[in-house]
Length: 208
Image (cartoon, rainbow, N blue to C red; front, side, top):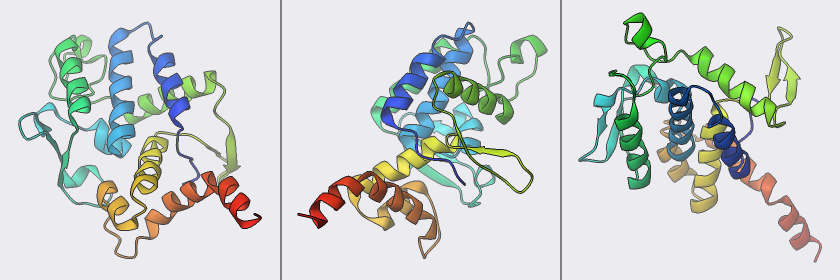
């Protein structure tokens, strides 16, 4: 996947841009969705399909069903206190009842209870990032569709890069990303992202 990790600065500006939404529920919903992917490294499909019952506020963890991720492994993932507090405040302010943490904004009107559709999340993200001037085309795929530098996976890529930068351990990075490849092939993209950031320092060390 060609997307790059979203930077901390881009992330903060994205949250400010999202707060400008006229529909305050959509703003709060999308902000929390971004934060869960950014701080927990969740895949877009995993975060979108979180049910409120999946969150255990006493144990401070979240159940991730196997059918919601490409690894097809269920898991109980720990939630730090500051993220748990964000979730609590968000649930208290939800304008209608739903089993989903991120419900469709039209649920109350349609008298249905469905999670927000992925296309809606993708389009909202693209529109906001584009308005900030951060979006550009990396390449065109074999079907001549543009592939962009930032998408919803950019939050998870930031998380993986951040974890490796902190731990310098591929195994720990894979553990927190919940990747089960024994050869750790998927972790190398995060290692390479860190190395790209450190090129200037490495060049200076080489040519001292």
